[in-house]
Length: 164
Length: 219
Image (tube, rainbow over all chains, first blue to last red; front, side):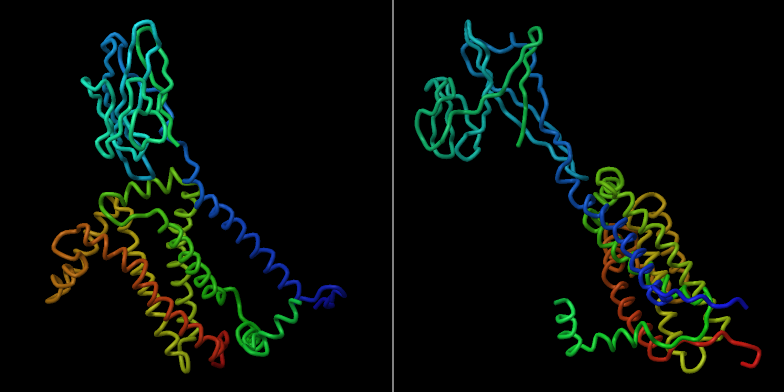
């Protein structure tokens, strides 16, 4: 039997305490840090709502009459697929750049309709009128109809859809 | 400051007494086989923690169960780690608990006055197997679906009351959304509550009665 060595600074009991708490803290950190990521990562995922959407050939849209174009985009949140439909008015006028308006009323997000006779967009929810160029004529909306950034590739019209 | 707070609490709660009773109790000279109870407890706590974390994203319906797990595995950061620990920890827990039982059996540690500790251990082992059986269905993939089909079918072969057991397990004649929902409830509420209560009794008895010696030739 070898002679027992006793450390003057650290007895067996304290050595075990220190090793146990060090290993315990290490394990807690290895598990705990990924858990934080596990909780917050879905909050900062890649958003699907930033894309150029094709509206087809510019020549398909009549001159001087705002024309409604509807499309549907599919979004995936986690494990759930959801579709959202969008409506945009394409206004093409002689000698001017094409303008694309959202059909969402700037008041409370109802959909506006083009009224040919009154020469304006009408929102049925609170009787708001927008002029052909999107400016507010009457009613509660706080600002003109939203416009999309547009680009032409050949005769193909695209709008930049961005959310949030 | 910290010492003052500790003293204040200790005077009222006898924290030092709890520490002495729980951690500084006298134990005979034992070997590594005696660590398996603690290992099982540790794994059980880990199963609880990782299970709670999985429930953040998991959805127990046929429409979304599989997709939500795919999301955990690929869409969430470190989801693979959390689920992996829950998956492998489950198998490991059965292993450590079973070897723990073998040690108690072969050392005769279940004898007087520890019979009731053994009985609570049996409840815990059966509960652990129940957790395994119910948890296996939750991913709702082909393997879990058919494993549960076969498992409940086996329960159905009990003479006389077999059909009754099978229907109660499945919540009807078919394996369905009802089955998934009740297995989920069993897995996260009912069996865990049984386990926690039983573990409390098991540990109380271990502390109260102390642990047994390794038997020698005289015993």
